[in-house]
Image 1 (cartoon, one colour):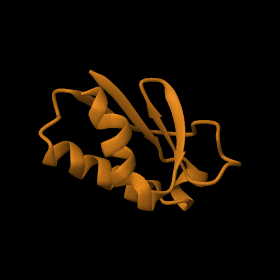
Image 2 (cartoon, helix red, strand yellow):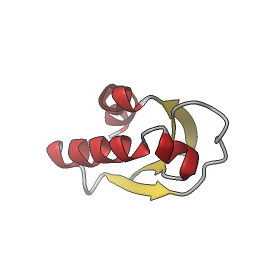
Image 3 (cartoon, one colour):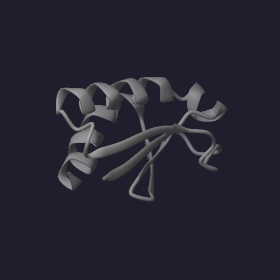
Image 4 (spheres, one colour):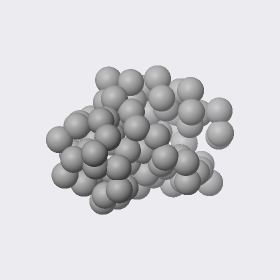
Length: 81
């Protein structure tokens, strides 16, 4: 199982975390990955002062722009599956 989480705390919410969550959910469904990806929305990843949305993949923290969510998923998450 691949662990993927998106911060939905205040700062990340204001930076567009809702769009990242929606994109990831859609891509998980589109690629039939429900049984391969453990996806969760979490509160505060402790990166509030940085721009973008905090995303954790297998414990590694990334900051992404919501507009890049689809590309990030394809480049960083799909290869792990």
